[in-house]
Picture (cartoon, rainbow, N blue to C red):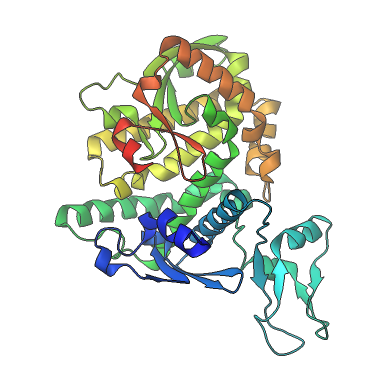
Length: 393
C-alpha cells in the first residue's frame, strides 16, 4: 500500500466522509481532511513529496499533527527512508519565484540555536539569504502560546472568551446545530491554541504514560488547609481524568462518583518538589475544561462544570499558598512562565520520576486506576481512557 493510501486509512477520522462516505474527497495521489475548528487540509503526493496545505484560523495545530503523522508513517513503514520536513521560501526571492526553493526545517532550527538569523537559499544562482524566523512561521513547529508568554498570562488573556465559547457551544448543542461552524475565527483560533497546549503537555510525558495516567486534578481534604501555612504533611484528594475526553472520571461515571478518586497523604517536601508539574497540569486542565467535552458530545451541566472548576481553582490556590513568599516560589514562577522555554528543559520533563512515584502510590490503592484503560494511538503512543472510548483506538 502506498503513502497516499496509507494516509487515507490512518486519517479516516478527519475524512469529510467519516459519517457519510459519499462526502469523502480523496483520489490516487491526494485527499482532503477536516478537523472542525482546527481547519481543513489538502494533502497532495507530488513525485516523492507530500505537500500539506492547511486553511484555518490557527493552521499551526493541524499542520503540526499531520506532519508528525506523515513523518512517523514513512520512517516506520519504509525502513531506511528518511522524511525531511521542508518549508518553501518567501519574498524577497533572488529569482522572483517565492515558494520555489525548499528549506529543511531541522537545519533552520539548528542555525537558530547558533544565534544565526538568516539562512542562504539552496537554489544555485539565487544568492538570497532568508530570515529564519519568517521561514519557521510556515513550519509545523509552532510552540504553544504559553511557551511564548507563560501559561498564567495566556489563561488570563483567554479566560473571558472561553466562558463565552462554552456558553455558545451549550446553546448550539441544545439546538442541534453544528457546534464549531458558527464560532468566530478568533474563537476557533483560541480552541486550536488550547489543543496545542494540551498536546504539548501530553507529549512531554509520553514515556511516563506506559506506567499510568498523566492527567489528574487535586484539592486539599482539610477545609482548614489555608489556615495552616506551615503544614508538614496533609491529605490531598486526587481525581483521575480520561485522556481522550479530557474529563475527570466522576463526570464520566455518574453512578459511581467515587471511582478514580483517592486520598493520599503527602509531605510538604514532596508537594514542593512536584509543584512545577502540578502548576502546569492544573493550568492546562483549566484551559481545556470549558470545551473538553464538546468533541465527544458530552457537554457538562452547569453544576458539574462548576464543581470541576472549583476543584482546579483549589488546587492552584493550594500551590500558591504553600509556596508563597519562598525563594522556591519565585524561581518556580520564573521557570514555568519564562518565554521561549525549550521542551527539553521543561520543569515537567524533569519531574517524570515524581509522576512515576505518584503512579506507584495510586496503584497501591487501586491497581485498575479507576477503570481507565491503557490504549495506543496510531503512532503507538500510550493513553489512558475511559472504557467507553476504547473503540476509538
